[in-house]
Length: 177
Image (cartoon, rainbow, N blue to C red; front, side, top):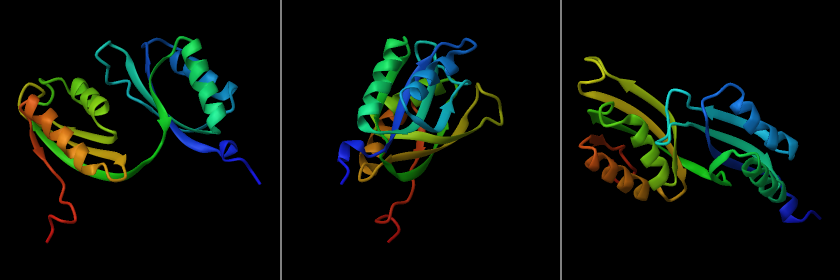
């Protein structure tokens, strides 16, 4: 019988990388060197964090013990680990935001979503037919933890209100009646 701490689990690690050649590869070495199995890498080179770094989200598989070693090795290598934890996003929602999205700093808006919710943005489409200085709209698909859709929507409402953006919310099962 296997000990539950030996079970391989899926994890997500959010990193901030300096925009220099080789930084992504440097961040992947501690994962491979400590037995992590890469599932996906979301490298947002077009977006910058408030510190001017590139956000990177890495999904991987490892045992809990190896995962702790991976996180320690990333930090020891000087990689800025923003968040590390079990990947348990099981609900999906799609919202539309309209207003001066680009002028109100889209990268900051995405950072606020990441910082104030248990959701991750899995897809983003931006439409700015009159140019980035005029009104634009964005469709965001988010993955959130089971049971956290209401709290995620509440946080999104707060972010939209603070940035004077209009939020078009998805229909939920109770709304369709």
